[in-house]
Amino acid sequence: MAATQRIAVCAMVAAAGAASLAGCAAGSDGAREGAPGPQKGAPAPKSVVRLIGDGSTAYTGAQPHLVRPEKLKPGQKPPQFVVFSWDGAGEDSQKLFSHFRKVAKDNHANMTFFLSGVYMLPEEKRDLYKPPQHSPGRSDIGFNDEQGIADTAKQARLAWLEGNEIGTHFNGHFCGPDGGGGQWSVAEWKSEINQAKEFVKTWKTNSGLKKSSPLPFDYDKELIGARTPCLEGQKNFVKAAGQMGFRYDSSGVNNQVWPKKKEGLWDLSMQLVPFPGHTFEQLTMDYNFMVNQSGTQTQGDPDKFALWGDEMRDGLLKGFDRAYDGNRAPLIIGNHFESWNGGTYMRAVEDVVKKVCNKPDVRCVSFHELTDWLDAQDPQTLAKLRTLEVGETPKQGWASLLSGRPAPAPKGVPGAPAAKQ
Image (cartoon, rainbow, N blue to C red):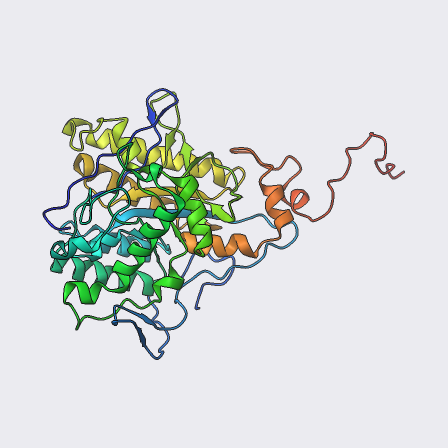
């Protein structure tokens, strides 16, 4: 990002001792059902490119490399979904966007990149942004420069063509009681959403990069979900987003259970997982591990970097195993393109991707793909899955739970079939 960008100060919500539950952001072709994940590397089918607006975006046909959603068959054990998502995605000198594109591609994974709209808006055009409850041109994460916009557009373009999702992390990343998203009305959230979309739809005009290739999607249709800065303002955001055609939200905190809808949107919140060495569980986000290890110091004691990264990696793996061997609830993980504490959390996330995304019956997917799969299921099937608690397997097996028939009565109770002689 541009030099003006600075790390946003995040609100921290204490729970379970020192646990922080606030998130922070800073500076179709598909694999067959049952495959370990989308196959990468094949070229997208050729199609006519139809430019939209000023040519910043374009319709290029159905997105390639997506997992095709199919309804579970009666008695079929659900796959284990894992979503890796990135708040405030953008490409800067660290080149973490391009790096994790490759990590995803090498491990049969798709991911969700929540693009911040101001990362597509140059500093000199900052007054185009009119944030709710703040003066025009204000942003707690700054804006971008021409090179940063060009690099971010390139990564977003390639990411989408590889099957990844481009969501939104909105714009100025305002948190806390002084005009943060938690104080915004439904109308103000609609304004913020529309501006985030507009900056992506007009990045060529605003940056002057008119000869660059367009983003290969219609953002009005591509954008179906988000995560709010610091996880604030979910109540009014969800109301606004539902009226604007969104299909999911990932702005909450939840346990590892099967999701349900809230105000018509799938609630795909990040989750609490075991925190090695601690008595409380931790949210599946790099920032939250960091604040419970080095506080708000983004570069703490170097002698502890390896330990801190191992704690995040092992915590995420414990959460994965608990779901994989238990109720098979989708595991939702959130991250930032940051080198906090020497980049130890980036290493942890990469280790987890490599460890879990190649396992049998595991699908590392975007929120878009998970939403499509949930929408394809019978509501009764999902209701049965939601009866399972964290780490719980069906007492009489998956075939019985999801057979579509009532579970058989235990032998010896009134109404049970008589034993054969």
